[in-house]
Image (cartoon, rainbow, N blue to C red):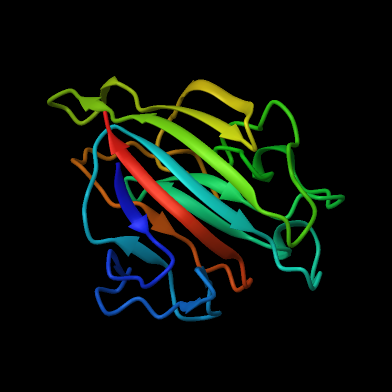
Length: 194
């Protein structure tokens, strides 16, 4: 496995704007710093197994999508939603563990704010036809705290906030973490190429 965060620094990461990652590293974890932008791995990946641990803020601020919101973007474009869904209702395909705006999780496996959640994500990169359409769509399986919540789902395109998924040809891409303005914590991130 490639260790993407070992508790010490963000040397494997950069800001999505190309500069240095500006999130706060402390006590073996790192925390989203509001309005500094997303971060992404310097290295790019195709198909992989990803392990990531995260916790929602203990101070509950906001509701629905405004509470403990972030996201893990596979190849920088397909989002597995991070959200504090503990006794916090939102739209079905925007819950923690969803493929954002495309596929709701099979169950809500969320732990209380401040407790650590794990995602184990198995992702198969797409293969494109010459005309830019999927010959083989990307597929993803997500285990949230060891519970299967997404089972070999065929992603329909980039996970858009508004509108239908768009298919854009691409090669390998980074793992990206979203700054949605909430101080979500992360630790113990590793990846295996498949």
